Image (tube, rainbow, N blue to C red; front, side):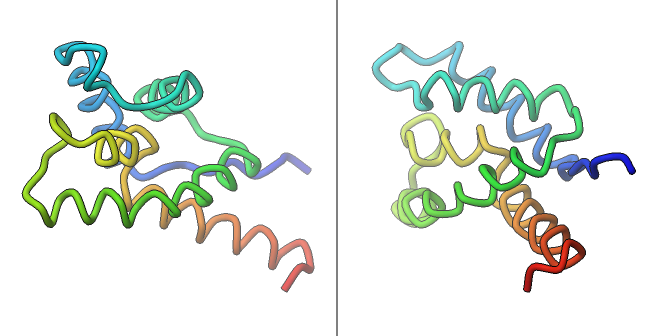
Length: 113
């Protein structure tokens, strides 16, 4: 049986493309994301399906959403908030929620409550 792949929402591709373009316009001191985050953003931007292990990593990125939400509540945008940039690079909140739901479904189908 083939290993199930997670298909991120289309909005994840849009978010990742936008943040990768923005990073090119910003000075290095204002660019967010580690090399892993940049690689993940490129993966989202390409629209490729992702493995369960990758979906788990994306779901775990939810821990960064409160910082992005706080920055947005303060009127910041991706151009002046590394937290917002990072969440966008990982597909945005919709992708993070979608990944968590996919992981939960896969674990349930594998007999893990």
